[in-house]
Length: 116
Image (cartoon, rainbow, N blue to C red; front, side):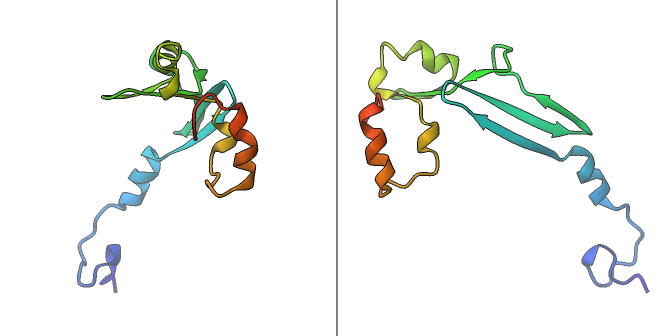
């Protein structure tokens, strides 16, 4: 009888299906973390592409730096790596998703440039 249009009882007005609009703008993002570089892919509007970083490159350094005011990523973090090495994290691919209680973390610690 049309009383359950859009999941609301009593709404009998004919409204366009908004789900079709949502499907047009939805996107899937994929992250590829490497030891030195990472790439971000995007599937949207029936196309696939690798996204560019802030300097126009598709390959981004896998480095994160921390200052008192900011978090720095990629080329900005690489720029501060020598002057602020204690607060710059590199080679963290093997640590992603690992708990601090994991015995494998103890094996990685001697090879890390920063304290975990």
